[in-house]
Length: 460
Ligand code: GDG
Image 1 (tube, protein in one colour):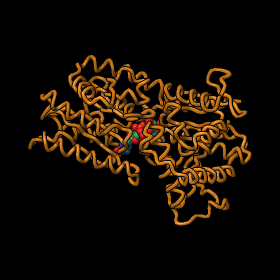
Image 2: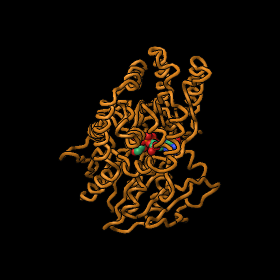
Image 3: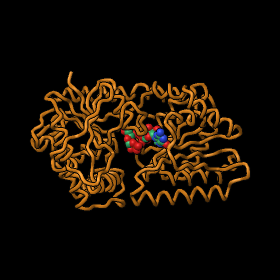
Image 4: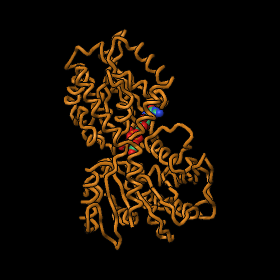
């Protein structure tokens, strides 16, 4: 069997607990198959010789997985990662052209680091390796590998949403990015809506032909495209829920909030996650349905993220002020409406928090998938489960049809859904949860890996 080579921006030790969705999924994939994981070490060095092409990636073994990492210098980090990835591609792909900072220097740094990665990776490749590239940081890496003579199968999975064609076309370098995509054999996206946008974009901007279902032809190459919604490892998450740390967390929360209903949100502190709208909706809930005063508590975990990007700083200030105002206006000596925690919580404790909550708010303005929604479901007691309130603009909404769907911009609509969730009868909660569990079990992370890799192996 071919070796699997995973390429992602960051490499994490697969034997240590991973925080993010991508890291968990890649770890799961490589643990099964073994292979090589290539990417940035996470280290910023003062000066690196790697960009001369002479230095090699550092290699480390972790069980049957090899980790190959490259350091970046400050300028590379600021242009490739902070600049183009997080100030151009992330906002534009989340429909936020207003936040994009188009800057030639960012684009040049992005290209340079992709070239550097390609050079380092190319040396480590064997002829029958199958390469699986992840996410928006690395769109051009296949083109750079092909330029070096790489003929391996290369697949690409985009974890974030694909916006409509005209929004992508606003990126000054979009044609170059699109050509680069045609150097892959398979491009996977999360949801059907993303696939629709991608295909339309390639038809209109690259005049791509469609010789068959899921096949696009342009620039003398044929590319397969498909939707592969990412899932979670349901059993692993359920086992985490049964472990000591999680049970302790559950007991603490139930004890502390014995007379209250908990509403939970767990997100990176990111403008795509719809956090201010969610907090405003909670305020509307207290206004409109006053029976929830002294009774409902919103626990919002906001894990710090990309703190050196301006837009994130503004979000932080907005959240501080919104939460402070609600607690000041509505709080009682024995009831704090919002517990806003701007820190991350250990992954092993999260299931206990989810299980102690009656309602989960997953209301991103736009999200590729959203794994928190699936983790919340997996952590519930099937006999007395909580209710998921889910943005219709999260990729997960296509699959999780029995959740309470909301428009994340509609504050009153979200407040109504919160109220409906808080008052939902047990039999309805149980039947919705059972249906949702069927879906996350069927389309779990193992399904995702196997389906993507099978499809990639099938490409000519
Ligand atoms: C991208 C796409 C897509 C969150 N807070 C804490 C914490 N988390 C964990 C969650 C979950 C992961 O991080 C977040 O995954 P999401 O899917 O919700 O969102 P992104 O980070 O934006 O991920 C997204 C995903 O890639 C996978 O393809 O679904 O659409 O944007 O696993 O549990 N973990 C810990 N403490 C926290 O405070 N330990």
